Image 1 (tube, rainbow, N blue to C red):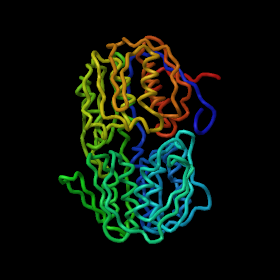
Image 2: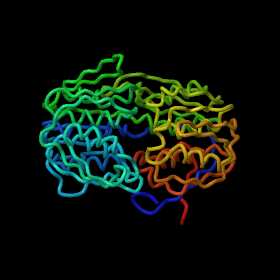
Image 3: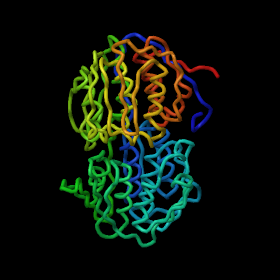
Image 4: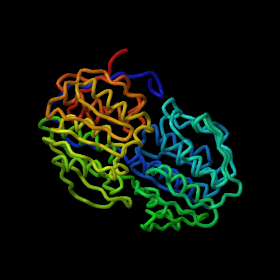
Length: 449
């Protein structure tokens, strides 16, 4: 069932060509960070284009619980009056992050160097996800964590009364871990240093610099070395959130596999730490044109023109995984309609996302007639060619928004309809997915239980 109510089964039926303009919501990663840094600044931060999905709304609720004044003033337009670095008050209730691993982990970081005690929980999916990757580095600052076996939520974190700066090498490619350490370092005296061997999305570094933090990035033999000087006074900003490249991947990929499609997707972030899916699709033969390239809110963006394409299977370089980790589920759907096999290696992080995404996609694709190979770190999809996927199955979403949307795309181009057990989780990241895809020409229907 959905983390926020009863399950909502949905069926996706084969449809005609998709056409029109897909105005996808604001970037989820940047929306979280804009609220958090706005709450840690002194004065009023003005945000436009904020994603108003449940994940981001849960972060807004958390910032209010810490004492920031967070108000919506219009569609996608928010104002945050912050309390300053080190100014968080202790919440008087448990902080529930629903399905949002990003929100929970970033907020654990930003409170861990303040002398407050906070209890975190979430839905069944989030309670199953590992948090030790955050609490271990937080302990280096002086914070303590008390959670369930395996470092899982519900969890209480006692922030450090006298935090110390740390030097930390991130053990896996994870923007969430990197960002949590940097946010904790804001309230620690001296310099906090984070080293990542593989570059991950850099929104936190960009936004910290925009809010006035003393932060530098250097590429060395150790990797990407980020140095942050603690206890700054962050200055309020005007943040224009670009459109989410992860959300945009769904209409883009749908247009590529539904014969005759031709759509526009305007204003999509093309940050090089996030655009691996587009690089991969072009290598597969996708007809994607990047128009009107420009910068908005400190992020590179472009308008995408996307046409149906006959695609070929490729081997995706494992070093690209960090720049497209959330897009492998929808890529596996696209690969099902390609000619030849698509090999995705270095993707073990998918095992610990909102669900085990490798297993979820493999089982659903197999049920729809696609041949799959997998191991702990690899997913191989044997493409059936254009229009070659049988479909006809009901696929389990495992409370995972990206699994749900991926199988709905499959049904648009398969020979027979594809159903999912619950479309409810889609609201966490892409609340307008259903009407947006419907306006392009998709045939999605909610089923009565």
